[in-house]
View 1 (cartoon, chains in turn yellow, brown):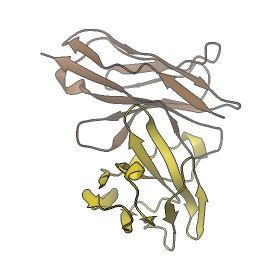
View 2 (cartoon, each protein chain N blue to C red):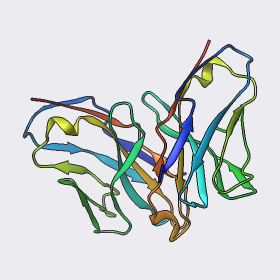
View 3 (tube, rainbow over the protein chains, first blue to last red):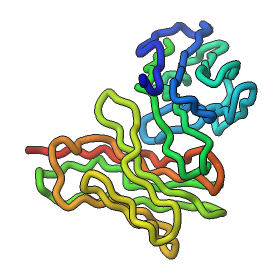
View 4 (cartoon, rainbow over the protein chains, first blue to last red):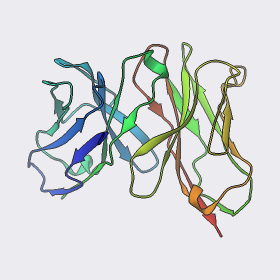
Length: 115
Length: 112
């Protein structure tokens, strides 16, 4: 199993550009989520999905879109990049199982810089 | 809402020293508590967890006990190694919820 994979690993954008961060998992997990990691702030939830066709907003959703057309993939779209979106982005997945008890598996991250 | 407060550090220790990282939480329900570790250049991985009061999670020599009366989940290790250098995150998820709330993270550096 590859686990959770993310591409690209690094990305530099100019203000106003759009892009999609890719996330895929091969563990047949129902739950997937996106976090951003900023110094001194831990990880903050952007969007999440409890299954194909279902998405919802997290703590910091503004400026980001998601969709979940398959169980495996959960791309994150930046509509018009801003310098405030410079961050490290992590995708995570977990099985539904017993809900909050389940371990979330994280991808290696995408480091995004917006100039 | 739910929140986690943890000692921010950075923490620098010598090998074989005792490590403790404080973590306290605020939650309305009955949360599950977690410690995640992030090694340099990698994503987060689960270190240990506890799902109810007085549970002790343990892994790789690390321990943490879920204390409901003090709303705490402090991480401890009796003798650290250079390989324990990492960022440690305390986190919680509310009962039957998948969303994690994270603390700010504590950077630990262990010197030989």
